[in-house]
Length: 117
Length: 114
Image (cartoon, rainbow over all chains, first blue to last red; front, side, top):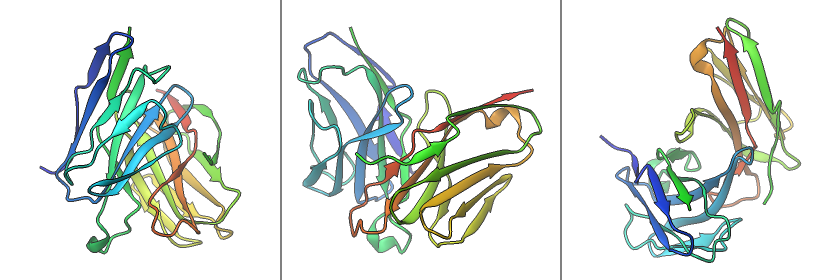
């Protein structure tokens, strides 16, 4: 069954600790994205990657880091520099250009709710 | 970053009523997407629009790509309790090129009274 998985669903960390959120997809999608969602603020783009070994900052990249060593995986690290890390984090991916389908339709994982104590 | 103007912000309706929401942009778009998000879950794509004037249905949902390419609307007919959630519009600017970033609205929160 193809899809996007994010783990864990809930994550608790102490203030000052780095934490890495997992995102894996087996859809053969080229592009992957990380969003942050806070109540009433919609989705804000943190980082995105259009191809392996390349990624770009989104609108709110400060305090976050990513890597894209494999097509299937796009982990997000929330560092201690992120001033307000408690939020709902969503990972998404979009189809490869070679699929012949419009490539800007994004498909989302179930999300990880991070709470920093 | 740029955001779409999505309205209304929230709606509270009776079961069986029709619902309408819309999104506007200050620039021309070549893509409009509508998503629904259930509480604690990721958004799910409902309808995708790629041509100005395009009218597309998905069950009780109908969405249109505005002729001016700066707006889109989503209608839900005969609402039912499972329609509850947050509906987001998203789009891609005409001059985005190969950049796959989407621009998002802030969402319309829908509550349905059985």
